[in-house]
Amino acid sequence: MPTKRRSLSATEARRLKSYPHPYPAGWYRLADSTSLGRGEFRELECLGSQFVLRRGQSTAELEIASAAGSHPVQEIHGQILMYFQDAGAPRGVGAEPPYPAARIAEIDSGQFVHRGNYDAGRVHMHIVEFAENSADYAHFQPVHGRMRIPWTQIPIPGVRINHSASWKLDPEREWVSYFLNTAILEIFGKPIKSGTGSAQVMFYGPASMNYFRFRIPRMGEIEMIQTHLPVRPLEQQVDFRWFADRKMPRLLVSYVVGNWISQWRRDIGIWENKIYREEPALAASDGPVYRMRRWYRQFLPESNVRIPS
Ligand SMILES: [Fe+2]
Image (cartoon, rainbow, N blue to C red):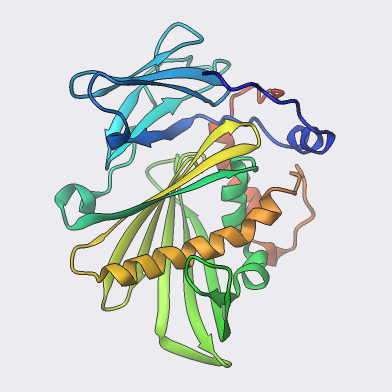
């Protein structure tokens, strides 16, 4: 059943007007593989279009209900992905994607095994905000500086996290950038060396597919995939799916992922209320926001038409 569109409130309309195009080109997660059996189909409304996702005998096929043609689909690491670009994009709907969907070698080889999924529901934000967030170094300490009980917002007394961040482009794949964060735990003002962990986030495209690599000294590594699917211009369906070294204790894996999700939730109140400024006045310590935006521009349709809901 197509969902009935509700009209935008004045505040939402003002927010939306401030942002770039809501549906940048890239790979998007549509569903978990297990949710679509052989011969089954599902209607989806997202990215300003209606789709029918249909599985043949062994592969996922996608058809467009609202227009002729189809979009490229791949099924990787238990998820069904679609390459989408807006009809106004120069390459045209249904064209071969300019780059393949990401594969994680350790998942393919069986070194990392699937350890969980989390459907985080809808967040009323523009997709670019997730990339903006990583480049906005100045917010890490005030927003993410306290340790919380994983999966909750309850702060742990006396435990702080000191963040050290950097951001870089992939020299060979222009659609990839990396955000790196080293977090040092501090308990009652004393840095704890054994509490140092690092996270690398690979932005594979326009913040639609984000691959986190958590490295826990002496314990192993976790690969967590965080996806954003714009169901409306200012509404993202957010999903998490993670894999870890087979030998890593499941409780530790859940602790690390839950820790990230607690910190991620801290940003939601900001994302759901902010507007986008084309030319913010920034200090050097604010982070590489302009560099990130120059990188991000490759995913926006050339015309960058702002479309209403
Ligand atoms: Fe944040």
